[in-house]
Length: 397
Image 1: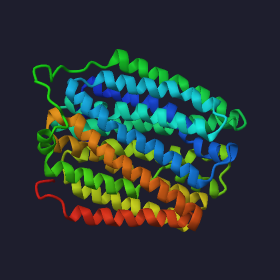
Image 2: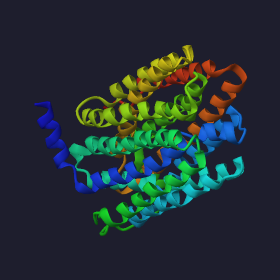
Image 3: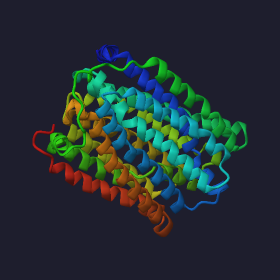
């Protein structure tokens, strides 16, 4: 009965959302082939410290999130989403060769920033496009499906990286060149496969960030923004999961398998939990995600044996599956339809600032006090977020 219900729901999801999911899948294969190896490449080949890795990763990921505010506002003003999303995917695709030719940390940082600018440009318009296309009763399932397909790419990328590392004797740069292929395929699929609905044509456009429009976003929306930001403080860059795995004595070519494990669990859990969010309390699901992240942090802090690290990484993946599509759904539910791009933009702006702070703190803790303290600090921020959930507005589910 459960299988029939799931099939029925999947069949109702519009084809453009499926295609957006496969676009994300291809781009994530490309990105994760690089990202699963980049911390080790920076440390072993370019001589970076954990603090430097934290700064570069924090700057890159926070840049992506902060750029979303501008692309989201612009997509609301224009009443169009696809063009901005296409530009963002294309920019990310064009940065991939820079990693392969990088002789120093400076070019790695530049490539990471440009790649994440591309991600930032596409993120809010794409999420707003999904909210525009998906029927209201399937919105959680739609976001969960897109996230699941995205995450399939996120575990196929590291898996491919492992195979090529073994085949090509740890040749980082050759693998970075291969990553260009799925990135270009993602751009082509978006260009020719997604048709944007014309739902904003008759609406007179106004400044999305005018005082009046910002007031329209309301208390419920700003609460979601605040919770999302504190949530991000608790979840620093996943580069530190890679470094923790390397510490445990896993051979360098096999380290990306920890990201495969995390993203496999993430992919398998995102759609079921997204569908579940259409039926039960959002705050209860967020609380469950936080409890699981606390468990993951404590496990990763206790021991660096590879089995322990894998257990912590699996829990990290479950946490992501529960929370990431859910937070996107909560933004869509709490914002007016004509301000969804702006809403995603500000949500990601605050999350970006928090991610930069979190990654810098994680890098400092790692270098000054050891890896264990980094994960204990993450667990502490989880507890703070759990307290914040208690003070939710009464009309949020």
